[in-house]
Amino acid sequence: MTVLDRLERWLTHPAAEALLRAGRELRAVLLPSSCVVCSLPDEPLCPPCAGDLRQSTLRPFDASAEADLLPPQSAAADPGADFRPLRVTAAGYYRSGLARVLLAFKNHGCTGLKVDLAAAFARALHASPDTGSGPLVLVPVPGSAGAWRRRGYDPLRLLLGAAQTRGLLPRGVRIGYLLGRRRLPLPARWAARRAGGQKALGARARRKNVHGTMNAGEPGSLYGVRVLVADDVLTTGATIAEAVRALRAAGAEVCGAVVIAAARAPSRR
Image (cartoon, rainbow, N blue to C red; front, side, top):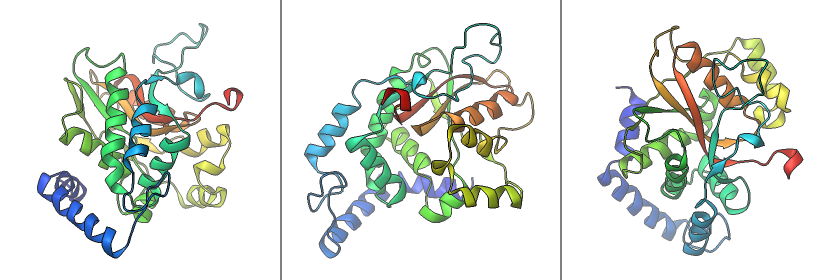
């Protein structure tokens, strides 16, 4: 078990959560906080905004039409047939309160929001047509080393740990950290840094920037394993496409993907 696994297990233990809750209450006295959505004091997410967040994620949907760079639904798809993109189930759209909560959770250290976001993710997971049809491994997209250094934690790993601890995963679904990041050569890392990261790139440049960055093991090592890819936000689909490429190269059967939020395609905004 790695140090990261031990830390994740500790963070999701009830005693640790009680300690963290007490720490948050003390911080609220010494360093007053405010709602990340409406700025109401004393709570990172006030009850009305928490209710709005839940309301906006009550009806998960197929978001595959919102992304241009998703891979085909099947690895054996006929190139000459009509293209059917990988099915991606999203809890809600990346806008308003959901977008603010995700940004605060990912980039501003508001790790307490994992509970609300885990519930939203679980609703999308239960709505996915791929669950309930036998054993399934939920594979999160790995964060980069640079993102870990900036944040001090992996948001997706923390969120999935909260969902697992609270028993929110569907029957037959388990979490498997099967994907790893390949360390890019220095010239490629410098080019990505100069570009300002994925967010600053266009759709095609995003695909080129992430291609070959993930690995799921030797060819055939995941033969017979059915997986669902998990990510936080779907934009162009380039990151999920790279995860699917790596998993299929290792022999896994990729059934689909699940995300918390999907950004609307430019043509649909």
